[in-house]
Image (cartoon, rainbow, N blue to C red; front, side, top):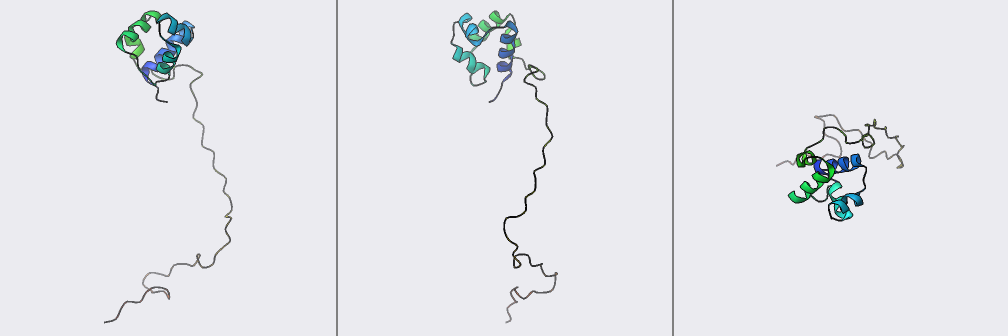
Length: 119
């Protein structure tokens, strides 16, 4: 969900008034589903709808559109948790001696390396 400043402000001002999405929708003659879409950041209202919302919420249209610094409500603020280290599991595959062969030192050809072609 992509929360826009308008979505956060709409939710904040509605909560301050202590009304539900349905009550807000009835006051501006729209559906509760539309209010939910605005607050969820899925849709944006047009200019006339923003003005109607501002009148009902007793704020300016600019207040609804301005970004809010920090979390909007204490319940929404989440503390960052330190990452838990993942437990290490022993390998479920048996040891394979062929795959664990050390690499030959640089400059010395190994028995498995291809020899250069002679003219």
